[in-house]
Image (cartoon, rainbow, N blue to C red; front, side, top):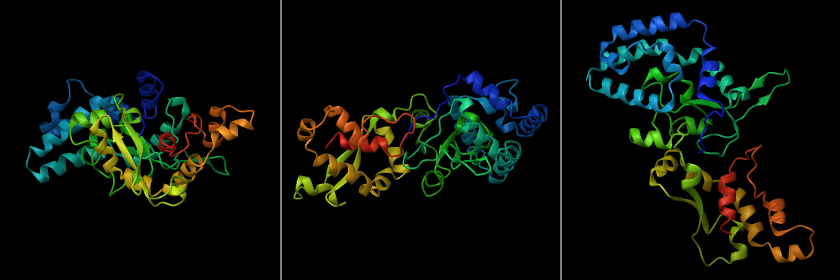
Length: 310
């Protein structure tokens, strides 16, 4: 998982995003009418809140709204009324009517978002490509971090979207489940959160499960070793579990094993004797030790952290 936050200021992103919506007065009127018809949730909004305001709430504010909305509806203990309220706001915050322009907004570099790999698993490249007719074909899902089905109020909020691969986005993995078991967890581990530290606080580790296999033979097959995780903060175990990251990375052991086997069998001192390159330069040429900041190769975090242990 990596953070997915625009490099532009919130003000610039919000202004550009709101410019996509032409019928603001009509949108705000529909929202105001719906709130009046649903007094149960009126207290969730400060006086003067307009429907368009919700489209640019920052992520922490969206989390508050999401959890408060769910609690308010759960406390009603009236399934018919809950459905009625949800349906009113689903009709207003209709993602299907705006899906394509949102995906294109996220993929437009002028808006400061960088889309390379799935934000959740980092296993799959999702950037897209240009077709023969010159049009862009986008290969990612614009996933709602906070589920729009459980809280339609966040369905169009630009700071609620991340680029995801279909595997991560759909059941049985994320689906409609929230990231984190509590509000505090969601605020911490979401890729939209500035406090997300998955990159530094979660490391891929190499577990040797069969120590009878000779070192130089160990990574020739997928036997005798596995990929696991270590955590500075245990809250991220929820992320690893939700997206089946241990199982999915271990399914790619053939890819990682090729690098590990080559590193294990490398006589770097012998290479240096017969080369004009330094040790670091040789390692870079053979294993791409430096993070590729332009291409953002999938699986790179795992590959580099495993290589450090061989």
